[in-house]
Length: 277
Image 1 (cartoon, rainbow, N blue to C red):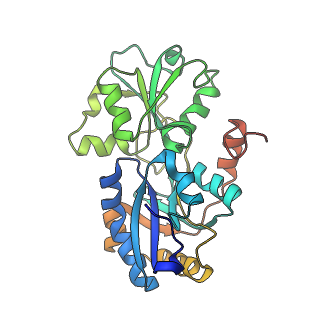
Image 2: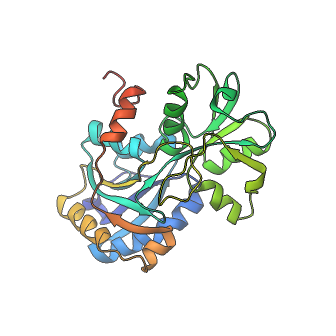
């Protein structure tokens, strides 16, 4: 994917973290790209980026806008002066959490049971596939990669497959993944148990951790200010019944949510860019 500023060729690239694989991610967000293209009068392309390549894609200017998870957002804000344009409102609101899931009858029923076991996740750049759960277990005295091992996967589906196949004792996935995979016939919810399952008013999805702000739409600093402003205005005007919203499986966008709760856990976990805080 060759990097070039949009002024050079007129095309704007909307990067999206490939949580569930490249093709599925691009298909999900292409309608939003088309909508932005019509709004901005430029061609906009949805580009799925593997989680390990997010910061490189931003630094190399191979993406101009990015739908980034919370910790990616803060990293890009602090390291590259990215601008927060809007927060995603998911089907169940502007928040999400992490899930710690194990197979039923596996002997893993609580956080302490993870000790000396192997857990599938998405890597340290992932919020709902690692950071939220790692913080949750650390609060109970178990540190990821010290007290239990991590097997980092390329997608949330791959993490669940590792658990299903017995390669790991548990998996870290974001809220909503279990329900989506069950709807797709890929798993049976009855085969799994959610560790430390929480109940939060107005949030029906299975989850283990505190809820945090959803993904953000951000603009990288090389994107023209007028185009960034136009993108912000366009997404904030989206209605829940529009194709771009329905194809993405969300309700729309709102003004960027406060990042204080995210910064607090990232500092506590010494997660970049707060590793020296």
